[in-house]
Amino acid sequence: MYLLDTNIFLEYILRRSRVQEVKDFFHRADLSALHMTDFSLHTLGIIYLREHKPDAFLTFLNEDIIASGIAVLSLEPENFSHIVAAATRFHLDFDDAYQYAVADHHHMTIVSFDRDYDRTEKGRVEPQDLFR
Image (cartoon, rainbow, N blue to C red; front, side, top):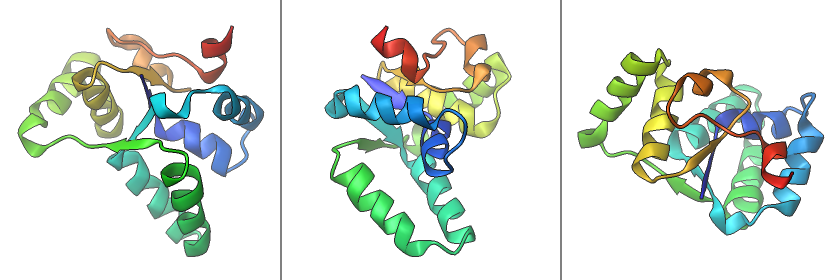
């Protein structure tokens, strides 16, 4: 099972330099094995609405997340100590520590372009790594 970091979705949404890699990943991946955090979903909502694209956000939510079966996971407040522990131990900012804590809690591999995860025990994979 895989936890998709926010930057995977941003690469796709903002059509950044690795958008084709992300598209290929989504076409080849078992979507039932993919997860994201509520934090990522909220972040993407903030970006869409800041750009005055509420309809695009709803389309993304309904067609790319809900319809695909990508599960949205959260961390209960009583487990937030795991965020602080990850942030402190691996020198992560809050969003990366949140992703790490959720992935660790659910025994998932992190899929990300963010090298900060390389300092952690879990590490990360990039989308292209999963189909070599």
